[in-house]
Image (cartoon, rainbow, N blue to C red; front, side, top):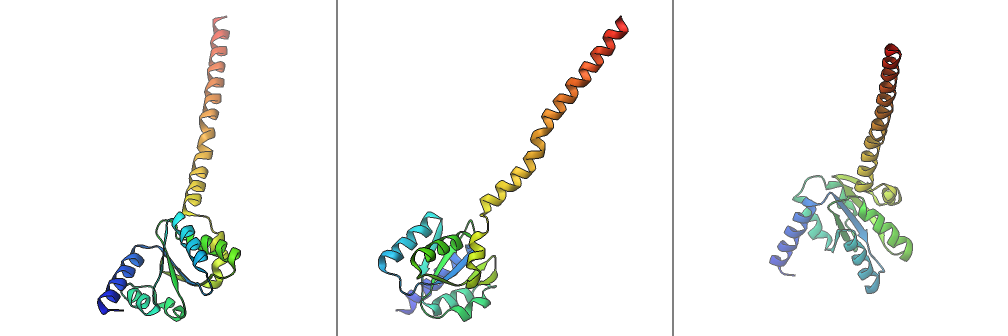
Length: 173
């Protein structure tokens, strides 16, 4: 590979990794072309970019960004990198589902918001709720007590008006 091409790949990977909030380094040994295509399709559906790049080029790209030192020991053998931009846990779910189905894909290491996790944590990471699910839960918690307040206030005001009306009727009599 020409030096210029290598430098372009390094720059591209560094740029993508700089924007990503989750990087998942996989070992894709033994995948057929059909399985690799299926994996890429699954990643695309989830808004995840997946690239297969030489380990030395990945390392040089990550050296341009701080916080990835813990990844270097895992950069051996065939390596594919999944880059997550919106939901940093989404690749874990795709990898978990795919590896359960085909038994060939494994997670070497992942980095979520600059924190390094070993591949053995895949099952735990895959069970974590997505960003949308967490936000929905927060909104639900905030809205649920407030949803009942208008009904309670309405009932209190109605009862208060009834009491005042009754008092007024008794005084008039």
